[in-house]
Image (cartoon, rainbow, N blue to C red; front, top):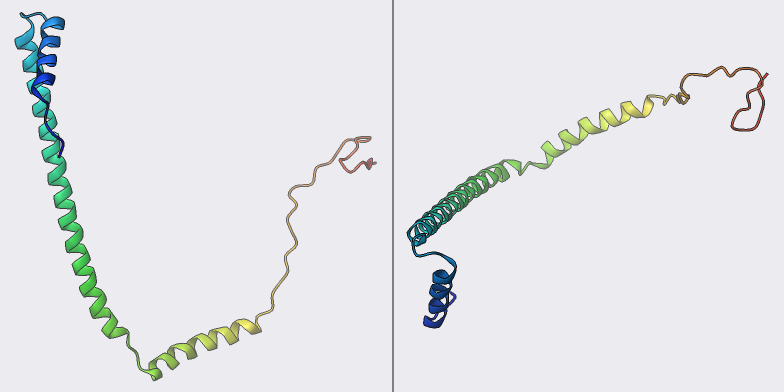
Length: 128
């Protein structure tokens, strides 16, 4: 933690206040400073509460997630027979797809534009 202001620093601040702020305006000035300080303290308190609540929620969520993961990992341990059944379905689909012929599609060059007679295309050929 940082050390607080020393006596000399406080004396300099008090002298600066006396020089730059009229004595009649000092009560108003200190009221505004007090309200600003209270607002900042309130904001800091709210930020700490929000951070604390968020961390608690996150910890609770992670705990629940770890429990669900542990429970589901027990279910994931399949026997070799179950894995073979799952792979057999994949092999059937794979074999079916191998029999399907691939059809090549012609690229779509978009609409064809008719040029007027004598207009030269970009490739340098004149159209008739």
